[in-house]
Image 1 (cartoon, rainbow, N blue to C red):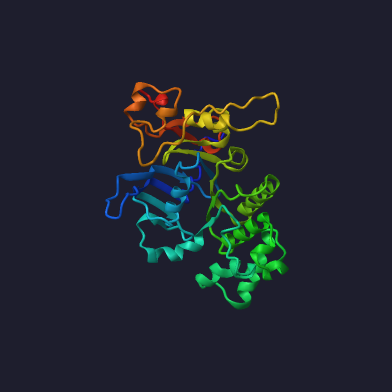
Image 2 (cartoon, rainbow, N blue to C red):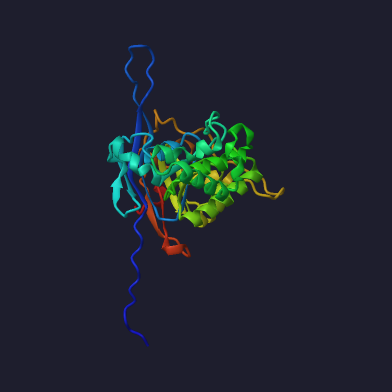
Amino acid sequence: MNDRPVHLPPAAPPLLSVRGLSKHFPASARGLWAKPAGTTRAVSDVSFDLQPGETLGLVGESGSGKTTTVRCILRALAPTAGQVFFRKNDGVTVDLAALPEGALKPLRPQMQMIFQDPFSSLNPRMTVAQIVGEPLVIHGLAKGREREDRVVDILRKVGLKPELRTRYPHAFSGGQRQRIGIARALIMHPSFVVADEAVSALDVSVQAQVLNLLKDLQEEFHLTYLFVAHNLDVVRNFCDRVAVMYAGRIVELAPTAALFADPKHPYTKALLSAVPWPDPDVKMKFDLPGEVADPSRLPSGCAFHPRCRECHARCKTQRPELRPLGPVAGADGGADRGVACHLYDPV
């Protein structure tokens, strides 16, 4: 019998680590000389880790803060507070939130974005070759024949014929345009990709094709995805973990299988009640009255309490924090889950 201790390899550090991320906007003022009337808290105290090769889904109703969160992470918007630690290709970790604008450009090839609308995200006056090759020009990574070869290669990888590269975006279908957008994002071989509602504007049959393509490209290029979506069926089949957002905060974070099998937060339960089932005998019941809380006039305590059927007196006065619930049985790597709800407070 071997009694020697087994030395397990250390867990890989996260590729992305977000801590206390917040983004507040001055509320719109009425009148020419009026001062800003309060603050719109679009994102407040968001924290999560993203492991290399993982796909994390970010879900919630429109207005929950998903897009603002990813724009702050990529520094398309400057965060009001918080830290965004990103591990570069050389292994060095930097805080994207603290970097000046000039220091961000060398990092752009390592983190890219796939946009929601393939009809408006492509310049109609540029050919496919110009659109896909533009990042190489901007960052001085390739020119001439080398750039042309890289454009041809990435077009093949996303399922487009290279001879189409001289055409303009109007000559393509929605699914083909999204493939062009994917090619543009991946031509610099990034390690981190944000997909902001990347398939929501496509037909259902085309959605499946694009999702399968993204999965294949993830394996080939060792990509890490932050996948923003409102279609929970897509999230269930595409993501490894899910973060549920409401009124600018993460209210539940869990492995995908665990979240869909046993949702904890009342908001998550309500969202899942709206997922259609392919059974005519199953009646859908979307049990969520009202609308998303106004980020410029958030309720006291838990922002969800005016819509929650399990609301207690404490929910109206004390804001719950995202608390760990412990390891998930059977989850890969013993992944933890967390929920921001007083129903699960240890007290």
